[in-house]
Image (spheres, rainbow, N blue to C red):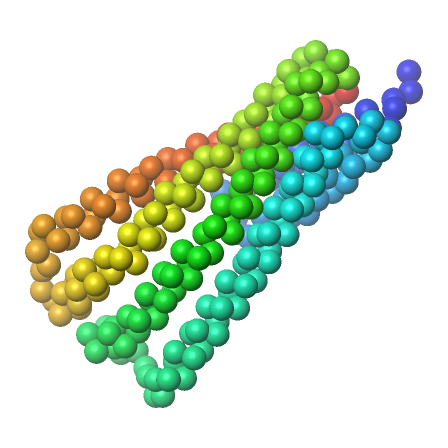
Length: 256
């Protein structure tokens, strides 16, 4: 029996999900080139979804594709703006300090000169975090739409394939949700760091001078940042595992 365009496109989508699962594992040991390759493959996968939906015109399937594209646009524009602002501020800062050079190790005077720049960068980072939150929120919405499409239209696929694919979409949605939660926690930590920066600055100066900061002050800051930091790390690992498992589940679509 000849396969329909819908079936062929979803098979191609499933193949690309398998490739993404493998590349996700490889990315543990490699750098950014793998991430770039995964980004390009995902864009081609969205092309498969667009072709598969030409006749069906399913709203959930179209929203899945559109929300991912919107997330990419928000992420790219936000990253460009933040990088440009940081670059301008750094250049202006060092222009205002002619002849400034770092000694090895850095002196208290040198640190105090760059300390205002650190505060400004914290503020910029805090302003950029909502951009990341918007992008991740769009990704959560995208995969939720795909999950809803698969769960409501499971009859279009063999039962075992539909079950695995639906599970995969749910896992990837949860993966991005974990990243969104960790980003929110990170934003709170950056906000705290901005407001308690004088205490952080004092501790750094103590270390530069070779003196030991008070146990209460040092221990308090460690507790303040370490516990949420561990939570962020756990959420990040869980998100990564869910992402890989989700891609593998979705790759079952290649067996249509």
